[in-house]
Image 1 (cartoon, helix red, strand yellow):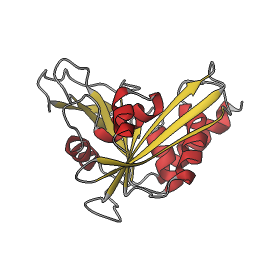
Image 2 (cartoon, one colour; image 1 turned 90 degrees about the vertical axis):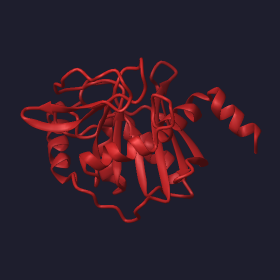
Image 3 (cartoon, helix red, strand yellow; image 1 turned 45 degrees about the vertical axis):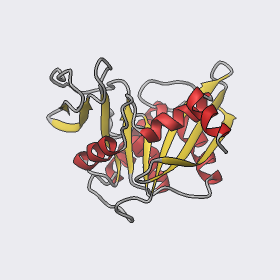
Length: 222
């Protein structure tokens, strides 16, 4: 694995990320959620994509792709490992989203190219990174009440928001993926959160990927 070539590609792609709002449809009519996991001791990459209607946030489509994992886990280069399965699931979608939430980092990455930015660039759709853990940067303590936020700063640059979505839950790390400003990224995550720690698009993507109870209940209503 040529790490130097991967790093050079990251830096090149990061320079192409659009950090301002560039929506084709506003407000978005369909919002997507993406979640990636690994099965069979990491040999299979599983990507789940969901499409929610906005503003009802009702689930209207879901797809799961499972493909052979194409590269080993290398810290800082996870997007190269995850995007092939996301692309496979993307190609299965009948309804493409106007805005996509990805469970992972956007520009809140040491080289400003987490999976939300990498995949957002590849499909050229407004994309937001919603991560559960910090990858880089520093921030002040976030107040305990829901809605509290602090800027995530790295090398003197704001690369995201640290936002508490729910009391007694760890905060989320919200960042530009592609074609969405930092402030709009936080705005849309706030708009799509309904009392759970995760916003509905990535919460549903996780539910579909893991066949959680909420998804089973939804299937029973069909």
